[in-house]
Length: 321
DNA sequence: CACTTGACCTGTCCGC
DNA sequence: TGCGGACAGGTCAAGT
Image 1 (cartoon, rainbow, N blue to C red):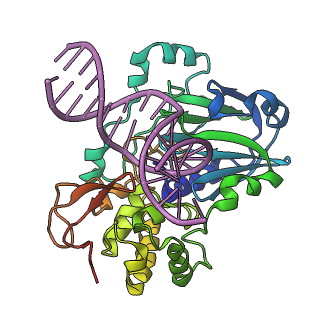
Image 2: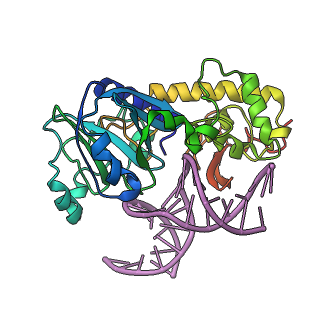
Image 3: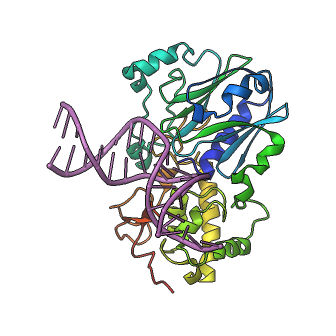
C-alpha cells in the first residue's frame, strides 16, 4: 500500500532521525526480506554511518558513509519504524512475541477505516514500546541505542544492501518512469508517456511504474475521479485536455497526501509509527456506497486492470467526449 | 511485442 | 463458532 506519498512521508521522517547514526547490529528472520543478509551484512553494514535518506518511486534509499546503500521496498504492508533508545521491546522478546499471539494484539492498530474516514483528526497511535512484533523481519540497531524496525505482515517487501554504484542498475531503476512531482516533469511529457500505451485502459497505464513512478491504486482512483476520466477508457480515446487535467489533479492529490502524512488503510504508518490521514480527504477510494462529493451519485466499486477500482458512474463516463 | 494473469504472503471478512 | 475461500494490491515472471 505505501505509494509515493507514504514513502515520501517515511523518507521525511527518517531524514530527521537517521543521519549521523552508526549501525551497531542487525537481525533478521526471513531470508527474502533481506536476501543478502547472510553473506554481506555484518561485514559491510555494521560500523557504517547513515548519511542521507532518499526516495525514488516507491523505493527508499538509505545511503551509508561506505560504498553501500540500503534499498528498501515496502510493497503492500511494509513498515519502517524508528524507535528511540529504551522505548522498544528488547530483542530477546521477539521469540516470546512471536510465540504468544496475545502479545501481538497489544499493539494492533484499530481498524482505521472508520476512524480515519470519519475524521478523528490526525491519528497519533504509536507502535513505540510494542516492537518487535510477529511482523518484524529486520531490526537495525544503532550506536546510540535506537532501533529501526522493518515490519511486513505479508512478507512482500524487502531490504537490500547494494553498492551505491549498482543501485541505478537494478532492473527496477533502469525501467522506472519519471517522478510525477519532479520539477522538470511537464504535462506534455506526462501525456506523451501515457500515449506509449495508448491501446490500454488508462488505469493500467497509471499503475505502470515504467510510465510514471509512484502511483498506486489509491492515487490512480482519486486522480481519475478528479479528472472525470473512466478508468477503463483507452488512453488514445481520452482528450488531450483531460490528460492535461489528469496531470494537474494527480500532482495536487499527491502533494495533499504528503501534507497529510499519506493514506492509512490498514497497515501503513510513518517513521514514528503514526498513521496518515489522507483517506479522510479521499473522494472515491474505499467509499463505495457513499455519495460522490461532486454530484451525489453513489460511488461504485468495480475491477479494472485486476485491481479494486472506485468510480462515480455519473462523473466518469466510459464514452466521454 | 503488447498486454493479461498468476505468484508471492498473511490477516480479515463473508457465507455456510 | 468454525472453516473454506475470496480478497487486499506492488512488482516480477510467466502465459496468451
